[in-house]
Length: 268
Image (cartoon, rainbow, N blue to C red):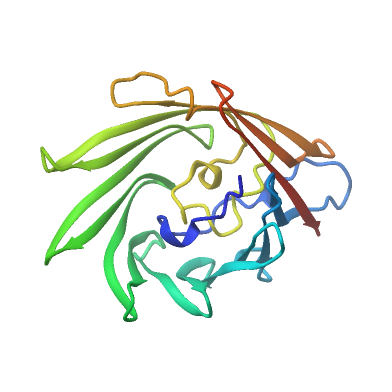
């Protein structure tokens, strides 16, 4: 499972958080810090990741199993905060998000634009709620026939720098309110999560970016609390020098699906 795919259509924001460099596991007078340069899926599709001089992701390029380009995402920064994300397909911008921040450097809004056949049109926006440095809520509001409707929301609770529980809510057309959709419970290892601290911590509202460690078990429950075995996963990692994961194998509780991702690094 390539974790960056979908970045252009998900929630967005990045602020300066703990970098993998700040969580170096030790071992040597000048320990190296490693950053993912390539991800490869089990089907052979892959992605190349480029960084700026501050080791923040600035470009994510996708390729199918034959090596043909599937488009790319550009990410722009100001003082390590993401200010703009653009998804490029067939040579033109198909999706864009522009971000604004408060005086403390926390995000206030991410405006969404998409090309629906006649150029980019504003669709709606993301909003963010923080408790200290932790993002505890993200929501998406869409414009429908001149009305703004909040169509989904995710909430996050943390333990030791990792998301312990995420709850997702979706718009209910019967009650015209947000209704609990799923609950995600997470278990972690104690290793370095290479997806945390590279400029994307809040970009997708995804636990893989928000948490400092790597999830080893994800239990997904429906709105009634019943575990969804086909959506829940156990994850096993191979590690580089017992520090950074070089391969993840995620297997559904009911064994209906297995997703494999391999990671290649540049260490500095």
